[in-house]
Image (cartoon, rainbow, N blue to C red; front, side, top):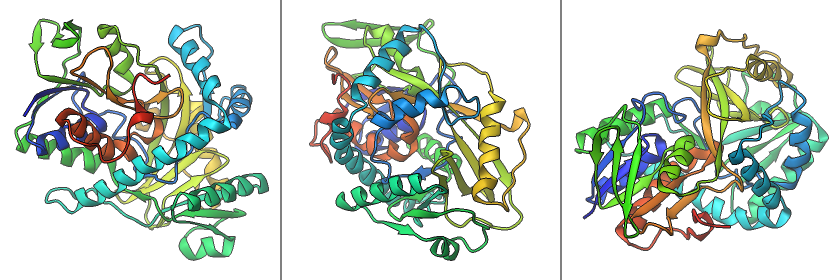
Length: 414
């Protein structure tokens, strides 16, 4: 068995560690922080086989331009001459076509369904109570245009073997009886599920420590040495880490890690916000997505988690309150009885989704170094796809046949 070093202690890195340790490998996870506040903690906790359409779509280009002039819009690209953003934008424009969307649907669906099965299996293991609920997700819409788009999506989903149903307002009320609704309808993504990301991350960390996985925190990678087509060692200032196999799973920090190797990892950090509201009454039974507003609402830990926005920019600690207000103001338009207050800045979580330009994750070996695996670029679906990614990474490292084909996720794809 191999000695493996994983750079990155988010959900993808920890999931990879879980399956690698289970297969008998000796694993070290190296993280720049303390593994308690990564992007993996603040997300909506949704497992979404329904999301088989990549970010790069023909309509997103024109819609994105319109949104750029609205400070409360769900998607924003901060104009910049940053070379990474320019390269990302050109690749996005190249891939934003119907052919790419069609080709991406099957591999994304396969990856999502594998991940959902693995989460279901994991939830049955001792010590892994992370509130997995398989009631699906409801995509609510208010306009005829959104309804037509969602109905078309549901039809495509059925062709892929996914379980979805288009609902009337009356049918929505039956599923969400404690919510006052002001919608034209919804699509029930019955193939989806949700969980508590905080509980999942806590359970993974506890399990890995108990199994002897070496979790090294607060160690930022400062140098990576290579020789003869192999990675030979990773340094954090004056501390050295060596292994037989190396994995880059650094989320939005992956391009900086790649730069130390001379490897280009094309992705941009997409900042998202979330906040929690304690509810005295369990008003929402099934998680909701608001189609036009691009907002997610998930029942979680005795309350509701509200989340949304995708703001492409350099990694920074700014909180754009207008974007948070955009989330808050959208909710009563769909659910008049839900009126969350604008949270205090200290109560707002933000994180950076590692977003590839074509909307597909990077999973597989790097062509320049035969002991280097890349596992990043999952965008808004990091948690959803992490379990499958972790298993696939283990299979690549172990040299066994992968559970699904991974050619479409090749890190060196054009």
